[in-house]
Amino acid sequence: MINHSALEDRLTAIIKGEAIPDPPLPPKPKEEPVKKVQNPNTITYKQFFINEGYKTFNVLVTSMLYGFGLKAIFSTDWNFIGLLGTGFLLNHFLTITIKLFKRK
Image 1 (tube, helix red, strand yellow):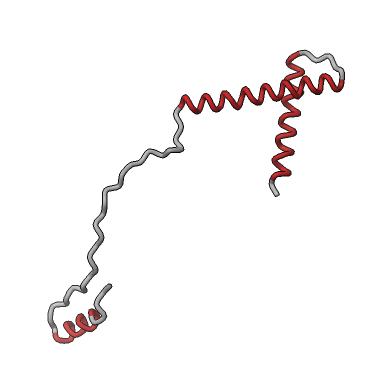
Image 2 (cartoon, rainbow, N blue to C red):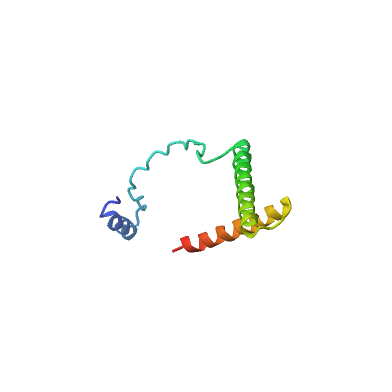
């Protein structure tokens, strides 16, 4: 903290024509070197591709199961691509609907 009479001393020095004294400043804290710490949330390429592969596999299997369920309910004769496409549409429709209702 600056001395309470620092301004008075400076003004008095100006009136008398003397050199202006420097205001007393508090000592500066010592700066410690910044240590670089690796972010624990950083993932490697291997972990990234494993995670994304798992998500893709999960979506494909879920879509296939939804497709088989719709095929059984409606007694249709869909090929595998039709089954997967219908299940994919139902999967995303349900995902979006659930996200909308969870927003509250």
